[in-house]
Image (tube, rainbow, N blue to C red; front, side, top):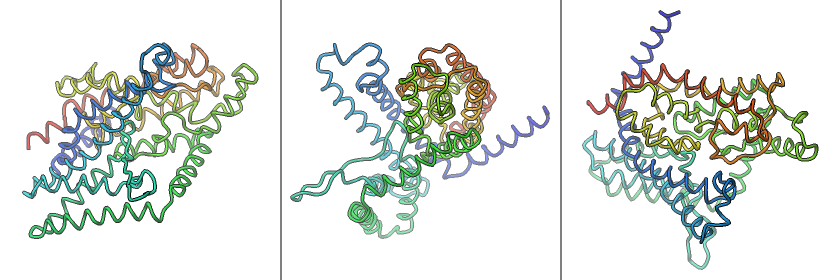
Length: 422
């Protein structure tokens, strides 16, 4: 068994080292780590906005900030605007960096390539037009959310595509740039004109419905958790990561109605559902239970860069805002962390399911804010059940233990350092 473990670890490290030598991977790592300071600032802005300046914010609910803070409404609008602006620009700048770094390796005009890439990503935004044009006025918006890292995969793909295309036209780059921007603008206008918002909403509604139906069966729940977190490691927002902590709202509402009507949680109609299991016990530090990864890093890692990233990311990750860890470590596209990132939420779901199925723990019914520290969610969502609190802590401990050997590997074979040596 020990020999098999060493062989598996060697294979993983060999693959990671091979990957770190590929130019496209070097571009991704350089771009992600460069954007880390801005992503960290954006996460702290989001943290203040989500815990204080929304009605369901943790601090606002506990301390009634909205009732005693002067100019609360104005402050709320300010932080919300700042949150949207900074976190959306992170994605645009990521597209710029990917294209510029790729162009630099090919000795192309990196500034031009980066500018075109960021512009093209913005123009290709499916929600570019906030409303219909009226009297010649055009209202524009961004649609990416820094909270869930929406648009990261698109930014990387656009960056590589623009660099490749402009590289194919070394003598006509101005013409190619104009062509790309026109194509992006035409695509955005075409989406706005011919594809109504209701179409996108209908697709999301169908996806949410399918996800919710799967969530009442533990085996299907494990499958969808696996798929969603596997996509997330590549920067693609899966079905669970777009729910903002409130997946399968239909079953959650029915459970809540039952609890409010009968004043107990003993015979909840849907004890197994995504919100009660995944959102409550497996979304600790966000997707992949990154609070456990952060604890494992602070405990075991020796690399100063990794330690510094974890320390800066601690507060946002504690409140389930994990974008700094995704881009700063990075977790995204990191083969050394794929396995625990996928496994830990599944184990957490199975542990919570086991306790609920054996009637050792009440079902999580009451809604809690997304930014509630993950290990407290079960305690609050069950109205103060101590077993739920212990299960939340147990899941965090198990996840930390799972992450530890992978943190050691990541610390020893830090892919960012390998790229920096090239």
